[in-house]
Image (cartoon, rainbow, N blue to C red; front, side):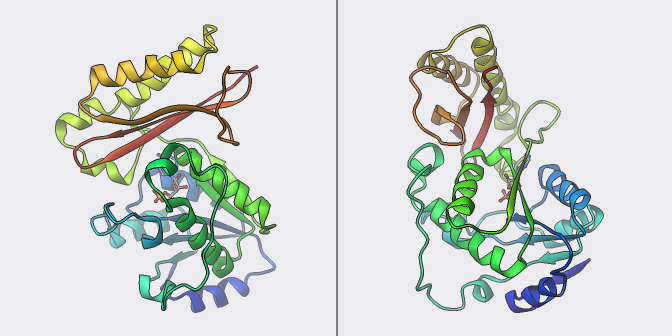
Amino acid sequence: MEIIRTPREMQLKMKAHCTKSIGFVPTMGYLHEGHVSLLQKARKENDIVAASIFVNPLQFGPNEDFESYPRDEAHDSKLAEAAGVDYLFIPSVSSMYPHEMKTTMHMTKRTDVLCGKTRPGHFDGVVTVLTKLFNIVQPDRAYFGQKDAQQLAVIQAFVEDLNIPVEIIGSPIIRESDGLAKSSRNVYLSESERQEAPWLYKALLHGEALFKNGEKNPHKLISAVEEMIKKHTAGTIDYVEILSYPELETMQTLNERALLAVAVKFSKARLIDNLILETE
Ligand code: AMP
């Protein structure tokens, strides 16, 4: 595996592979089995696998955790190499943004709900850095986790809108044995919060069970999920929402594919989780 640190060098390396299929996994590092599942999928489906580790300042708000976001390059390199990555791109902020940006990207749909409500500008930052990364890596396929379901829906719309020649591939959420979705931010949880955190997934499963038993009213499902999270955790609910997927529009009744998603704030970590409610 080669580690590459500048956009120019990465772009030249990738260009040299233009006759081969390139699979790309963008990440913010502090890799765990969720990331590894994407890397392995990319390894199976492509000739060349590229991954990036870049904590993108553009997608963090002023009071968010950009500075304290966990970083561990040595650990990440080991995991990436073991998963079969050929090129690991680790640019510095100054190499990605050498001068003030004179171009902005702005998403007009799928961003005023869920995490977009409390993180204004977040998805604009995501699509801006992806535009840069896609131009640098020039991948045939790019891999994203269903863990960030809204991000996946936004990226699908962005790639379709702009005819970006990359296939976006979604991949299932990887969980701890007790159901907690793996996340780089789980290290921020205190011991007692870590014990409570699996209740997010349990509450989602409870909502899904009610849905499968015939409950089609989104408000009733939302209340049931909220109640379970409030009862079993000390976290503050940021949202529990049900929206059509991937359009992310409000639904009065659950008559099409829907996303049931939660975000809960603990003392130092804000956790998100979701599942898809499929209609037959
Ligand atoms: P991040 O490093 O948090 O930006 O995540 C990089 C990619 O890994 C994103 O596409 C995430 O959706 C994905 N990812 C993060 N956690 C998981 C997980 N538990 N299961 C599957 N994919 C994940």
